[in-house]
Length: 200
Ligand SMILES: [Zn+2]
Image 1 (spheres, helix red, strand yellow):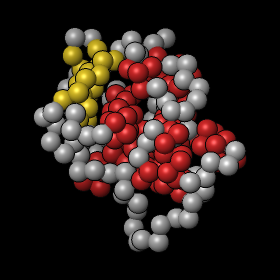
Image 2 (cartoon, helix red, strand yellow):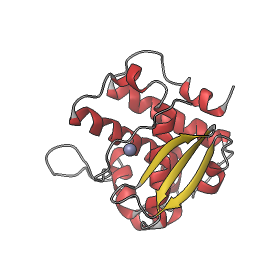
Image 3 (cartoon, helix red, strand yellow):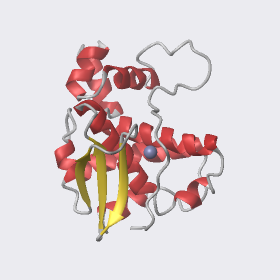
Image 4 (cartoon, protein in one colour):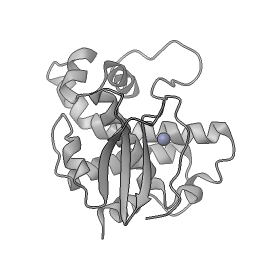
């Protein structure tokens, strides 16, 4: 079975609640790390970029989007915004990988995605996958247990932005939650939901 098929098959073939989808995303991220033989931080995005069905390149014309994915000549091509820094590009690669993994069964899992709120929920799910991929729960907890507890030190260790690390720590219950009202949208950038035309 292809790696992509193996990752897709971790999701049941039916509609998912968002809670289920978040659990699936974390399992897929951990499986992908295992398949790519990445076992310690920082996650080597070079190792991920060597996935047999993927090619990654930088693009200066993506506007405010962190990245984009398209299917072309039997490969998925991920474009990352060349105007962004390394930490954000790494996060965007994780985000786009989730779009690719979910492409085949997107409608089955999440319906027709007609409202802006539904589309944003999918974007948030892709951010969650990226966070699980670059900051795997067991690795963050291990580092925390070894005494690396400042978000700046952890961000450096995992090669992510301090902001992304802080959100991850909150998600894992290792930092105080935000006191703001509403959902935590800090992961989200003003990125349109752009889906490729063809399924892998
Ligand atoms: Zn997206």
